[in-house]
Amino acid sequence: MDTLPRASRIPASADTAGITESPVQGDLSRAIVTRRTTYADGHHIEPHWHARAQFVFAVAGTMRVRTPRRAWIVPPSRALWVPARTVHEIQMHGAVEMRSLYLDEGAGEGMPSSCVVLNVTPLLRELIVRAVDVPERYDEEGGDGLLMRLLAAEIRRLSPCALDLPLPESTDLSELCERILADLSERRPCGSDASDMDTSTRTLYRRFLRETGISFARWKQQARLLESIRRLAEGVPVTTVAVDLGYESPSAFSTMFRRLLGIAPRAFVRNSTAEA
Image (cartoon, rainbow, N blue to C red; front, side):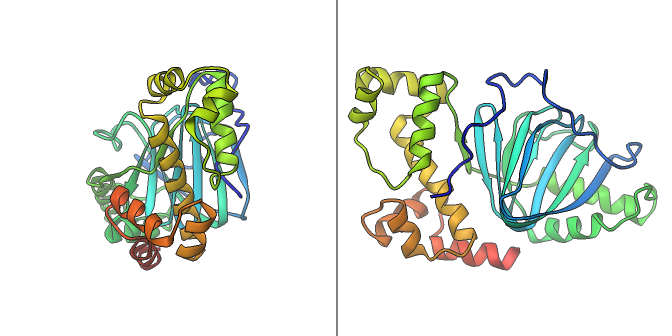
């Protein structure tokens, strides 16, 4: 099963030392610089960082973005806010039509200081589609400048979506997480995971909560949720997703999905398709 990227080359520290800066291409005298890129299925963008904040959105395809301590799923109806100087890498699933916005400090004022997945409104989607077609040296006092200011204002209004997965810092817990992510269909008792690490279940639970901020059981559930979103976005039937991820029945999977996201899987797929 294709799961969250393994063996990330991002160092445990979020320090940019040793990681290549990816310069923002465009007229940096403008508050917002846009970029349109197309990537093939499976393409991987190596760890890098930008001097400006980046708003990552895809009109088609699904992206997995990873930083030293977190991973996100970004389907077409969502976007990821990446603050300036944040080291990250991106994995493409399906052909991805990416639209990136690079905001200077003023345009990004009031935005979160850490990465977050945001729900993209139909209005913002249309603004982005138009923004990537404006001239590089657009008139900031004219209609194109007004478009960019409206775009920045709409971004600040977006609501966050819990499509992230925290990652532990210690080597042994990281290796445990990678083993789980390699086969999310397996339903191993937590005691077996603790035994493999030559520790007690209580110690495993305590360490995992301390390093990730959530319980071990909740982390496994979230990992399956993110994988299900990726697969649903690629058109995999709900029943197949439920079986592949080890749920007893499609209804059990749907109950979990609805409880965590407030929407049924099929409705999520319809909404994503309509907004993409």
